[in-house]
Length: 596
Image 1: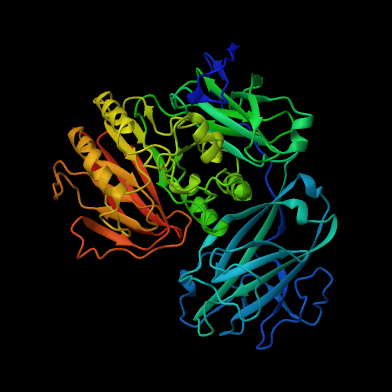
Image 2: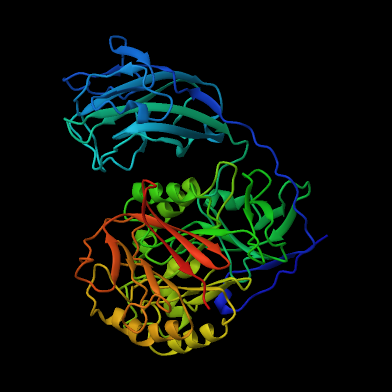
């Protein structure tokens, strides 16, 4: 039986209602309709592979490609004879080698409703491509530069060996028309002397049978991740007129939906609204599904185990969005590892708390909906900390004296994320096997003073946890910035001794736009028995920076200029860390023991 008891919470849980689900049992998942294939891997295309550029307007729907060559996909060449290492299906049509760009067109019919359709693109591409549907660009690979492309545009990165990427892009079907359509692809090399190129594409569509996905969807926890969830369902103005602030939820696969009244509040500096509800009393390690209304898509989440009866995996990083394509790429890579949740340690949308940059948050949230949701609708919760790019002016500078100051100077961070709450720093406990200590490194709260006193208490209260992981935005041990930076120095002086006293073994850090791993540090020297590994330095979806020399920097074990995510698996006796670049290559790995 279900019960809900909404009530107003304190300032630190602003805009939250609480509902309770008691005695729920999960059953098998509901089936979903398979996508319909419009263009298959072996479909025939018209293509242009000539020293002369393709004619102007070749991407447009009405362009006449009758005199172009045609052949079955996949297309490509490989003068280095490595084609046996390419994924299936192998190329069927040989292209003229050593050109910068190639043009492809495929005409097809569509009979569905574009407004209720989602398009999925599965790709095998080397080195890069821009995809046009009926003359409108709908996607481009992360290897391509921003801006207009032409026949002489080269990619920014090299793809050494092509890989197959299913669901590489998931986009709304509004670019489709009922009847005749044309998909056009501009394929590009990194340089004219490139030894290979490849294009294979499958286009599938899903009839969603619901109004639309929300423009933003954030799941997080304010309390116990094993028995609760907080859902933020964002709504456009037209979606609020006919919709009550209610989230429906049920154990996944069961028949009856249950209504949970949400609090509806404004998206800062926007005409959008957010419906937020906290659901409590859930069963640990159980799947639940939810929706914003009876016509919306159904999503689902899973609660965390109360005890570490199975490994728990999370993806971690920070400094999330300079370019949309970079964020998308690392998001997709992280999701390949099926994380239970994601930890982002600050500098999220790079909007600097400014009202005139609200569009950056729109894009950030859109990318989350499109790339951090599995095909069957699973949404991993996110745990976030604050960084300088969440705050007008970046840093505290004695400007924050009340909650009102925080809501004014960091309006998006403190309204869009239920955790860590208005305090700005907080703890999140998973049973007694894992706890995150999410800090504010002098952005809306100073390092020194009340936060340090809070940190001392928080660490002391968690003596029995196997894994206790602080998450800092500014690093104590930087890999790019100066070692003598004032915030880094303050962290080393006031927080690091507390970390060491309480047996911390791993600290996640960000801010430097690099990848780094330190030696295990204890009292400013290497100590393999008691030392703390400081990891990360924040390069999820941003431009990379140079790193200090590992050979000349005593505390660095590994450092490089690489976008990445940390894939961390929690075991009773250890943390297994796999640092993956945005192409899903392992760049570093380490095993960190549990606290003693």
